Length: 508
Image (cartoon, rainbow, N blue to C red; front, side, top):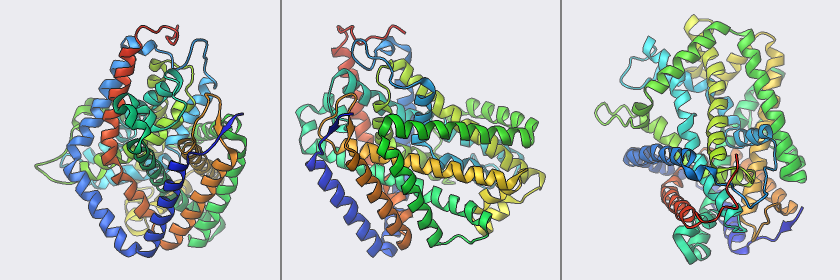
């Protein structure tokens, strides 16, 4: 496997920015929290319309790409074929982007919607119960994955068709920026993208580590603590290092395959051991509500009622997904050589949405069943003990709860390792000068970013600043709005320029 040298003009500024920002957050954590939170509130309330139009607009663009003549364009040169099986490819698509987030929110989120429903509904009413899972299907469904799919298509076209030997977002904007893509504007874009990756990883840590710690603590009879959280991060880094050593083809792919098998197995167990007929019926009803109200949910800003629901949930999610989309786009592009544009768009939307819907339908449906039947008061547990206690209570209510919790714990560890593995791979790729289509960032480079990210995570966990990093990553979504426009313009321009070229058109 060929390895390339680092790009100093991106590597060093990014490293300095991350270390400096971490030190500032640790030093001024009490001041930074309210400031960042206030900025986040301002963005979600003043730019709610922009993020909602962006998301629905990208979905329309992707439909155009998938159904039009450009859908046959192969992302590669003549003779290029996919490097991964469809199963491994789909597994990497899903696990790299969602990870522990879907394990966490599929259980917790419906309870929030039940107690704070949209559209002015009464809390804990029949209507609130019907929308509890349907809104989760919406937030983690096609719209969310549209935010990931567009950057993936543009990056793949830039790397495999235009032969730009760089996995950088600046290269994907070259059609719009021209020579400026290689100048300070391009460098600024790439450094911004790396920061968004750090924030995205902070989100995975912020959700995943406490969740895993709560389940582990319940199993071994130990209360959740900073020491337990740090021990989890250290063990997680060990798993990542093993995977990163083997690289993309043997490391990340294998972890993703294991993830998919285990995630499907756990969901199947809950369907069989739980209230099977209720889960199937509730999911069907929730899916119908989501499809029927899709446009209303997509453009809901509530300017009259001013409940804050769409800003706190929909707009926040779109901003979060948009902030991490360049990272996901780069990774998906790297593993999609030889696919057609139609195939890439269809499978990103398919694998992502179906995987998310499966977990919300099964675990969200099961959690709501516990609440509605009175078997477990999850609303009370959430109010008194927090989200992670809700997850523990749901797992403990299942048959063979100890084995289920162990299985859930292992799955969470692997999801966390996959997130770090993918993040370090992409950061190293962005900070690398040139890559061949089969090349990878140097092994030491990938390991260095992984260890650095873990070290920063431990520091922020000790200082209580992880939530600030998580929130600050969403602030990056504002300039990312401009990146989406640049990438879309570049792709359309390239497709029109290359219409006479037939060597990259798929025969599928």
